[in-house]
Length: 303
Image 1 (cartoon, rainbow, N blue to C red):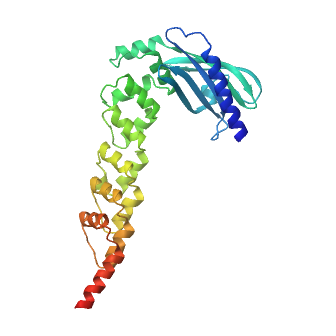
Image 2: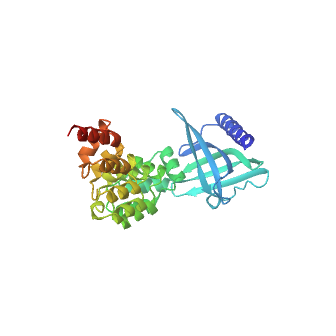
Image 3: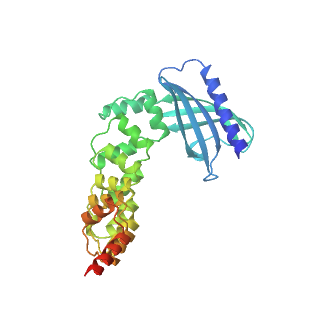
């Protein structure tokens, strides 16, 4: 496998060197190099890496694509290969060579002028060629824009659409959140929810733990995910007698590592029904259940 990865990297370097010698692309196009190898996840997918030069260096995109999205690409037989990726924002036409189930070569991306005009007409803005290249790779198009409109999101700009695509906030994610009762309202909040893995399943799990968790805001959900407030943690707190703890307090408990086992230990040491703030204060000052037991034993000895 290491030999294969080495060949893959070498092919990428060769393809990029060849591209640097190519003539400058026409307006509305980009020169791109590609490398491909079989996906580790599925026989019906391929890992495709794409690079192009920018004013600041290089842009690199690498992800798995279904082979059905790349008609003409096959890695099973050595020799020349041609394939394309046709998306609403533009088309990537590629050619190259496959050797030992790994391929490399060059592509030409052509931005779709009608797509750019549509975005401008909707008040989103006029994308440049690199914007359209990113939108094409992430398959961002009219369905996502119309779903945002249907859910009354603030009108996105081009950079918002690029961010939504890059982070996988697609139509399916939007609709699943909507079905769970959540409309983030703005693209940047939606991106934050996606980045921090606020999934419909996480929301449903919280709802199942009680009405206190049925109306959390998108920002609260993001903070809970950032600080690893897991469903098991909330459930264990409830079993320890701390039901309906607010989102902000859940975050503070997680930040200061006030675990259910710590709460049980304090209760066994005689400190029951402590408030959330008291638990956090004890944890901040390094008080342990053993400390509490020793303090109680010492106090008993003086009586």
